[in-house]
Length: 317
Image (tube, rainbow, N blue to C red; front, side, top):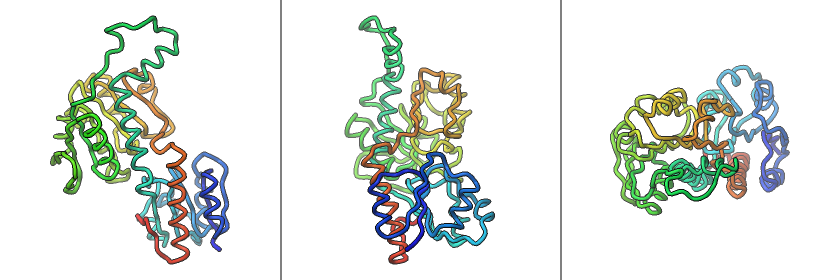
């Protein structure tokens, strides 16, 4: 039996599934592993089920003597907190949980799009503050969504799920950028660069994976190409966006608003963003539904079980 570390509390069914085949140590803390814990995880366990914020960097791998761990079975589709090249250089496989998060994350993108366009967060705060005195035909006028143009940066599983919802649900035309050619089964036009999509979009949603290749992919030049009436939505990873550039664009009125579920230095959210009424802010809720988190955990467990039973990793990254 392998020794497996689960770095955060997860649904009981996940722990039971792993525990039926291996010895499981469940860490009860909700904060990410610190440096000492990261090193101990690599040296003291055969497999680790980490998640967002558990920063398995190249420096951590180099600092760990006699690495015992052979698999980091990440809980989540995003794995930019793991240096995959460093892991493999030390004989450690890395897996993730694609598919399980697609619909839930797309739903949050639509939540943010609608919240920001229709000023829902602002309206809710208005009511809670006891300021509402009755219906007014000119009160809290927002942006109509139906029939507008959606721009998607990154047309993978999640990007397609967002575009499909917007096209079929809101009769939106879809423009997108993707690094490789993408053939879709619904109407959408692929553009050669991000600037073209930004210039055409009423709503620009970024849905690319995190990592060195996409760090600050969305920068000041992207916001400069957007319309002053356009709304930006990020449900990918916080560091995909140059956060100071986003704040500057909002403050200058280069764009009309933003909906954010992720931030560059989580859990820190800049005060400048928190004070803006035209910005909708969520605490990284992309996959925050019990069924989804359970499915993610079971998929991560399957990666571990398969690895030790057959040597194969179904969702190797």
